[in-house]
Image: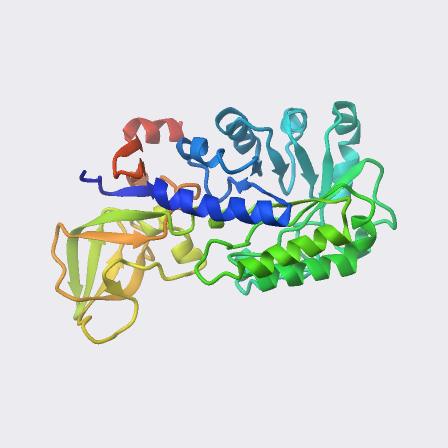
Length: 375
């Protein structure tokens, strides 16, 4: 079956493969691993994901509602700050609700105590292997979570859990270090609370990831603190290498010997991490560096009018032509959730493809979507 372009294509068989790995880790380690919607919120895939996952986590009221209605579970919730008008609704539906600061926890105490909400506090252990500042939450002057000097000797009355998130596409050794740093700083809390959320960034479905080390590390944590329910909430790991973005070459621009392929997608609109992180996406059949057999260099241009909406040179095996299809690999995570309608650029379709190659679900976007978004 011919698949559309431009389109984000999510492949069910690859998604199921990842979910089986994650489910096996959760079972072996005796922990709970849930989906973070900030990385992947394509709800037509939730029925499949709910076969393997016990829940999902939200960072806003909209995400929480989507989990409740489409995932069929009570959401875990953490947000850097809560809007007062939304707080009661969030607190009433949350499985766990985490505050970013002690002041916000205390300010909302009358509401969450009356509702009987299971509440936690985000803390900052000041450790992260992430080198890109945009994605590193562990700065001691940062806004995400309380550092050790701010905490009272004993957990505040009613506090049930701690939440830590400092990883990003990290390995098992980073998880082990994170746990050690957490124990060193907050061990006196861990002995008195009921749950510990280790956040996301545990990229356990990446090839070469040391699953045995992760399982052993988590088992040791649970043996040391048998009172704790341990939760992980990766986003990328669930959909790593499960989808791609198809694009078509619409034109070729040549200036001073440099050729740019003009595509029917946009990097700033549809693949913002390629500019923000930045990282070099894999283009199927092309090389990001010069090497033998790849003799034709092209820059890749997006269709918005932002001057920087392009990627530097890729190398192809043969000359490109208008009408060619380009495939950007691994575009299921942090794409559709971060895409925009800047410039009114048409949004690619989002397509869920079944294990036999059939289209299970297809979402297309038109002028009405743009019009509703703008007014």
